Image (cartoon, rainbow, N blue to C red; front, side, top):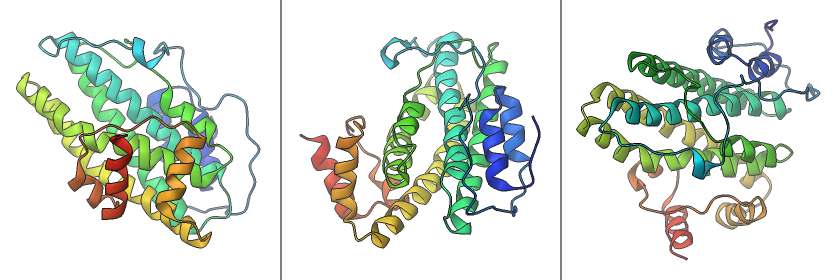
Length: 266
């Protein structure tokens, strides 16, 4: 696939790349200070996102879980996490190319996210190989990308429901998963998740910053707008316990955290 020196076209090219490792390489090859065609309206091509035939995509309830006391059981978990990170690469690339006329820092922020998500996928995929497996060996679900499709025409909804909802769930779940992996004797995997958790706080913070910036520019209340978006686009219902410390570090204020707890208790 041809590369481009212009950021938004390069992000689209990476998004269309079907091979996971080549996709990550394409993201890493984008300069940290790229040329940006801010106002270009790019036509949406067929084949978004580019993906290979494997893994098989199934409904979330059919992905399956296995005991983490076995190597294969832990590999199923690592595979699921790798799939999430690859989806996150696609999501960051998609927000870069799809939405024109944003400030330069918006595109640089999401480029940083894309590069870190690609690194996360590469760490997890390498660990899978150490365990004797590779990405594609187990089924996966497509719920993160389904939300991307739902919000493809609404940047505010995308920011509300992907980084602030789907990705923020990782802040809540990751510490417990790290502990289980360490207890099962896979400290290397737990260490990878520590890197991911640290970076994901920054990713959710970027989503929060731009969501709140757009709300402020449009005269919208952040809490009520989020609730309306979640209802309109049928976002998954969030359940506790919440990692309040990580969420606060990622830019959720006290009122938002209280609203989150109230919503989860209904």
